[in-house]
Length: 242
Image 1: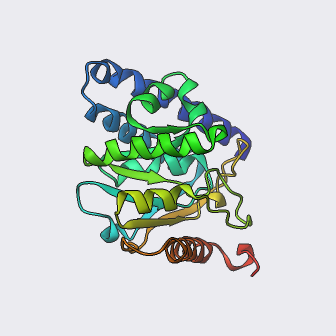
Image 2 (image 1 turned 135 degrees about the vertical axis):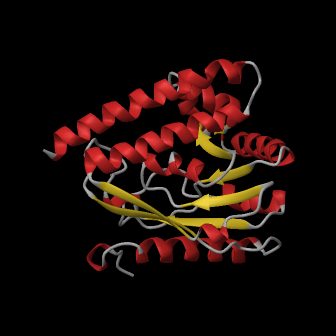
Image 3 (image 1 turned 45 degrees about the horizontal axis):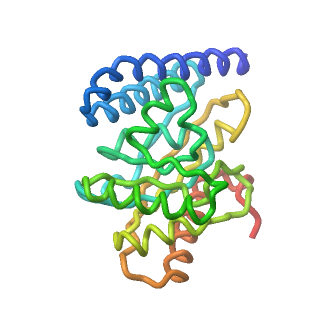
């Protein structure tokens, strides 16, 4: 039964991605960038509805009082599932995601990644970092709120943290506070595979880390905030051993 429900949800997930994307594509082509986020929010709402009624998954958003005010901002999120890149549009007005470059080749979805997001070629190393910084400055100049996943890829629940230097570079260069986001989406949705287990997941926005800290202090505070809270959102028997 779980497999059939999961398969139905997977079909719905990608079908609605295409539908919402195609609806707003003409407006985006005409240069109306705000419709990028209309498409993302519509797809996200469809996903939340389907997860509840097809898979028995409820979603809670906590700590929204810690969100940055309108205007340029930097948010750093734990990353366990594809879902983590869909849900922030429900509570961040115009999020600009730092994403892997391969996503721009996807039908429909890639169209939006090229126009509104920051694709990063992870194989390019130093050049990738420079390109990311350049794109981030442009996004901040437009008053966008950048969402980055510091580990760079989806992680299993018990994986040891592996925070990459990209977030430290953005923090230093943009001179903005960083708002951490903890979550436990891996309880219902593995980094790979089709199975979606019933359950209750939480996306939790944490108090911001102020600008101006040293690199080491910033990275330590960021990792500790995200990891400690993400682990606290798990049942005791699933928490990573120290």
